[in-house]
Length: 152
Length: 240
Image 1 (cartoon, helix red, strand yellow):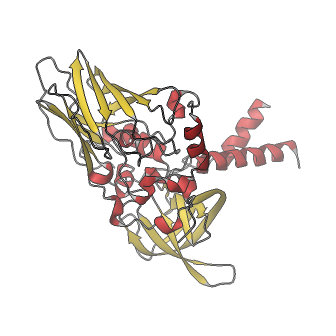
Image 2 (cartoon, chains in turn blue, brown):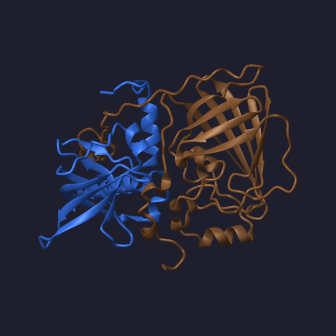
């Protein structure tokens, strides 16, 4: 491997660790209590249900596994309030949307994932609100634009 | 070499950074609240502190455990966190969660309305002392006193069921909490907390966090609404 290749690989690993390592399941409990930062995954599939509820918003997505079987995954987001302050609404994901989830797999091996980023049906790649630091930081950064007005 | 590192770093960044906000939500404004007057610092409003999962970060180093405290910390699992099961946060942990809270000053009492868990806390500022024969409860008994631009709060009577942070720093029912809320300017308060628990820590733990005024209202957050995590938490206890 070339020096550049080694650097890219090293930085890629560092960034992935930093990205997932800061996730904290939005305060309800430690990220590490349920999810494995060493098990990153990408899920591409169709949204079957959205739960805009506490302590975590969730959506369910049908994903084809390697054998071609459709598996329904439970994808965890931040709570509705944290998502709202990042610009989400309960209609941001709709049943039937084709989405891509980047996140971490549950430690117990169940078909659950903690989402870090979601690429929406329209191609936008957005924060999933799962990093608590992002949640407050985003609210502070955006407070000037969120004084009861629609922040476009 | 440095430029090579930078190029490699930039090559890994997706367009727009690591993600972006949706910016579609409409947030309600906070309610107007009258100043308390009488030389009392105006703490009314909606506030947040930085989300702090591990108190050793603002502390700047490790805590000093007693042998018992060290044993409890060593044996804990992240999944044991009482708040993972939607148990109460206790009087101070909710301050540094990623949810805002409202301070409401009334004559003789400061009320804290926590968005997280739709919970509240009362701090009596009417000059009373702690009750005799105080029971040990989740939020304890808090009394406060205004001096200059600072409110100092003393809390005792706590049970041992809460954690001080997400990292698993725990405490006994001998915990005494001292807090100061120092008004810096209209939009900033410095919160300093001291956890004094000789059962768990050989020296008191003291750290400060900034509180920043927010321009949106608190909302409703009900933890047990749909807590599907519980069966999947990795706890130190064997599964039933």
